[in-house]
Each structure stands twice: as structure tokens, then as C-alpha cells.
Amino acid sequence: MPRLNALGQPVGDPLDVTLPRPRPDRTPMQGTRVTIVPTDVATHAAGLFEAFGQDRGGGNWTYLPYGPFNTETAFRQWMETTCTGDDPLFHTILNGAGAAVGLASYLRIDPANGMIEVGHIHLSPHLQRTAMSTEAMFLMMARVFDDLGYRRYEWKCDALNAPSRAAAERLGFRYEGTFRQATHYKGRNRDTAWFALTDKDWPRAKAEFQRWLNPANFDKNGGQLTPLRILQN
Image 1 (tube, rainbow, N blue to C red):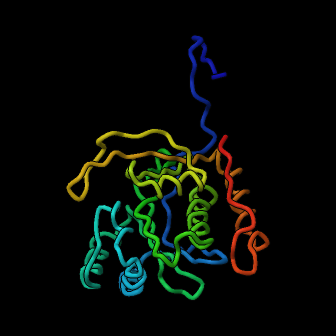
Image 2 (cartoon, rainbow, N blue to C red):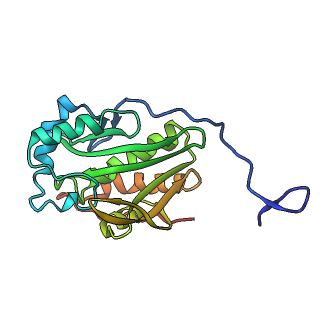
């Protein structure tokens, strides 16, 4: 039942967090399988171009508003233009050997409302469908909720991007609706599907991430013994 004010009208619960929240800083996020560091063009461009080049057909670029890039020079120029600001705040995903294998960013950072979005997610074939990619997303969530105390973490994608929608739901984001003709890119319309995880969802999600990522949940070949199942409230 909703709370009622003195006039008998339903009103929202009182805030249980002090606003504004701090902005994310440029410090590494360390996991057991991956490390996430602020993107540095000089350090990461060559490795990322090579890693993304493993996607021979270029399908990973379909739902991104840029790319593919035919040369490292063009890719590096795009990074210089896009990946060096404060919002979006790009991060590079490094594997256990320290090689750059993916990108992700915080964007639409809203400290006043304690809200932030994850986007520009580009995982090379080396990362896709691995525990490394799950850990990378978990580390970014943990920073948002545990370190920064945000209230809401959003995931948005082209409504036709079935792999992204499935990934959002697997990671515990709840589908909230589709905004028709929300934007456009590459000369075509985009209906945008919205997903979100809140600080109320986080304790349950965090516990399930920690259970799933535990080395005891994987066989000697790295295969999972039980799947990730984040039940929504």
C-alpha cells in the first residue's frame, strides 16, 4: 500500500539517501578475471582495434551509432573525439594478461538524482559469453551502488537488439518499456528499450553475482556449473 499524506493522497516513500551523489572518478576497478581502467587512447587504441577486429563480420557494430572502422587511424580518431570526456566516461576492460578487450562507459551521469546509465558497451569476441564479461558488468554496478551510493542504474538499447535485451535481463535489469522513435542512427529509426536496476534490487543481485562468480561454480574447463539467476523483486 502506498503512503498517504495528511490529505489522504498517495505519495512516494521518503528518500533514504543524501543527494547529490558524487560523480564517478577515474580509478581502476579490480576483479579476479578482469580489470577496468579509465580509457586512455594512447595506451588502449591499438589493442582495442585488434580485439574488435576479431569480429570478422562486423556484427558487433550493428547497433552502435558509430563504426565499423577500417583502419586503426580512423578508430583512434573516433576514440580521441568520443572517449576522452567526463560524460560519457569511458572505461577499458583488460583481461587477466592486461590486454584491452572491451569498452563500456558511464553516461547521462545525474548526481542530483542519484542516477547513471551504462552504455557504449562493446565486448570483443574474446569477452563475449565469458565470466570475464559478467564480472566486468558486476564491477561497474558495484562502483555505482556500493562506492557512489546511486539510486538507479539504467541500460538502454535498440529495441531490436535481442542480445542486448537478453544481457540486460540476465544481469538483473528490469524492463520498463519501449520509447518509440526515441532517436535515430546510421540513417534508421531506433525505438529504445529501457531497463533499470535500483538500489533496492542491488543486494539480491550482488549476492547472486558473488555466488555465480565464485571459482567453485566453474568446472576445470571454465564452464559454469549453475547459471546466473537474478530474481527480480
